[in-house]
Image (cartoon, rainbow, N blue to C red):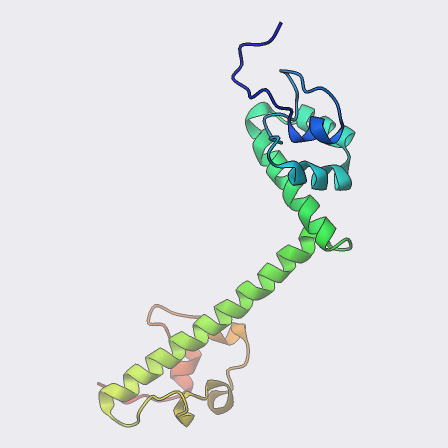
Length: 166
């Protein structure tokens, strides 16, 4: 007899791939729908069906969807980069984050500098202005130099360079 659970009559992606009959209590069915076969193929290729079964059996049911999402992500990244897998993707994202933080700090410093100079009309703040050459003129070369305070400029920067008072 069939269970009263609402399920489509088609097999899940795992059962289709392994060419077996999908039962109403199939462990894979809630996580690998029949219309997403590539999702299971990637996970199977990296981890194998028996290992995925073991993992899903060990994980509490409310957390299984997150576990499957993690397995899919790891499998995709491992297939893209067999050596580093998701660690390579994480490292790449961290590098990008640090670069964006640096760019943001530079932009804030330039904005504050332009604001000070435009209010006192000592200089214009065009992008080709030598006043904006922070790295060359002021020796700011690393993210550590951009420790920001509440005003948006680092304390060392203000101490080293005098600004006209408003």
